[in-house]
Length: 420
Image 1 (cartoon, rainbow, N blue to C red):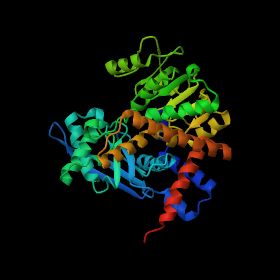
Image 2: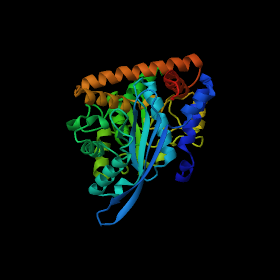
Image 3: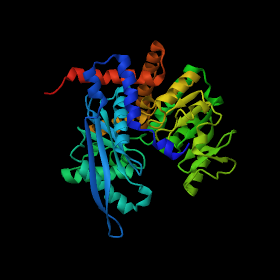
């Protein structure tokens, strides 16, 4: 699968198409469809950053708020050379549905800067982060819009965001972002939350399918935060990890990979490829190896009509946002592949972000055991609610999750009415 083909998939059209399918089934009236089909705000900023060599570069960034009917906007900020406004709009809409599926009181937001952060020094990255956050500050705040980490952003970037906002307010405002270090009001368990929520969903799905995890083979595309931790957690469930990949490519061993050794290898060599005892394969091939459970944990648009027919897994768990196109969903449905959609599967991240926000607002701190227990309760409940709708309507899990989420957002929007 070439990059050109992946680039041709417009995530915003995918997101709107997914919404249209749910709106049609729910028989939403036309006015409500028009409201929920578009973001409430799209904000584009162009801002200068002084580079280490004294030159000035102008970067472009975005912050989109899709819907605020159920609470303040919530969503990550990504730094990537391929960020586009359409991508950020799609991710913001997906965040709206994600928060609604798990029942937390947030609306959907998302942000991004067009930059390859690997090309910047730490000083340049800090300057870019602080200037970007200053530019979008008219939108953000602990009661308005709470950003979080996403692709190529982390606890350090969140610390710079929080400090920038706090300096302008004149006092410390920990609740303006989530995904912070523990020392600055971060939550225990936040780093593992996306992967842990994914694995809670996989355990429930495996029980539903009669799939024994100790006998299951797992392939994971994307070996960043979510993918690597999901690999460790699945190994703890005694599953066999047979393939993983990162941005440089993948590795495969049908007899299993030792996850901690792969993580150490990647830290040392900057790639999973070349790992002793495994065959190097492409990122695309990781999706098609013989396995029981496939976890796409990279970028959107990876599973399409071109390769969905080659997927051999019984269960696909979307740890990434938007990795599967609607055409691929149809193919999976016909093949009897069980899909846990992104807005449910990877909602562990935003759920623990919500916990962090609550702790910050209350100046409180919960133990990791408390966080994980609360996370499990929310993920299991959301999974069972979604599964019940899927079985009732004889439809696939993505449609069921959308029916649940869109109905909740539509109800909130309708009850609030139109202002003025």
